[in-house]
Amino acid sequence: MLQCCTICGRTISDRELHETLENHIIDAIGQEHPEWMESDGACARCVEHYRRILARRREPPIRRSTPWWRRLFPWL
Ligand SMILES: [Zn+2]
Image 1 (cartoon, rainbow, N blue to C red):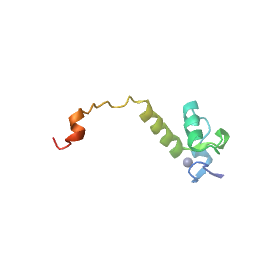
Image 2: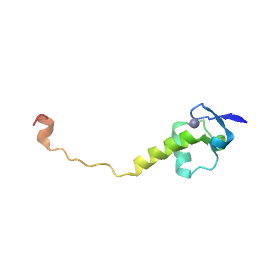
Image 3: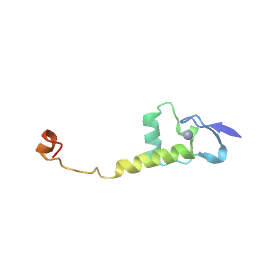
Image 4: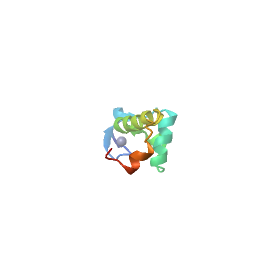
């Protein structure tokens, strides 16, 4: 049976549909797709996409302090 991924609109097979999702992924999808429900499931591609976003978010931000003069003289 073919189903449609509510998130990306792709037609997918049952096997591709993830029904067990981690809570943080459910939250992330819900933030961008309020109409989406957990019971709709998500395709492997979407799950992978959100997993990557969340992994990136968890990484500490790169702190690169810019010296004040760099903003005034960026060519230096
Ligand atoms: Zn999808």
